[in-house]
Length: 251
Image (cartoon, rainbow, N blue to C red; front, side, top):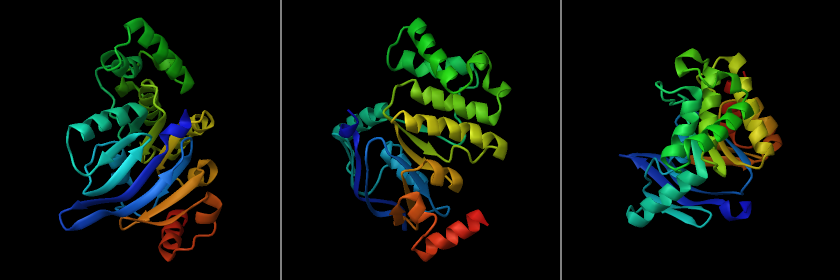
């Protein structure tokens, strides 16, 4: 089934006033790939993810996710495609966005009950399996205020997985975490990669990108300036802007 969910962007352009955030982006991601998006701040990485998920409109071009097409022109057909895409690709943010009034388990089961119409007992069974999967079964009754940043982010991952997506869009999901907590979140992504999920990960964790990504895209000034396997892009970058970025990040 994965072969039906390839992602293709053709000429995707996004502007804010006179500023171009995405400049004629054209690329493809095969189903099951893990792609790391790296590059200087303001390069368009997060905007690209938000366009893929329909959270941001774009001004030109087209996004195809399997048979679903997102276009610059809004309308009922586009809006219906956005809803289908959001069922296929969960999105995880750097600020967790957990419901503070719900427990860890409550956060995980809310959408399956409200959106998918699962019975509460079925949703709870699914939620417990997912919390166990991310190493948090013992925290099911804890509210977000009682969880560490790494634990909150793992709950957010479990919540996204509760909708049984075919892939995840991860937007700087470790940037708000202490170094010690980043590893526990990134390890979950590595496990999900092994299970065949498509992962698009905006990250400054170059070690993770090198270790786990199938491809690395470098975005700068709204353009993809480099694209290839980690050993090529990270170890032997060709673009001077990539070399400058990596030297700053890696010290």
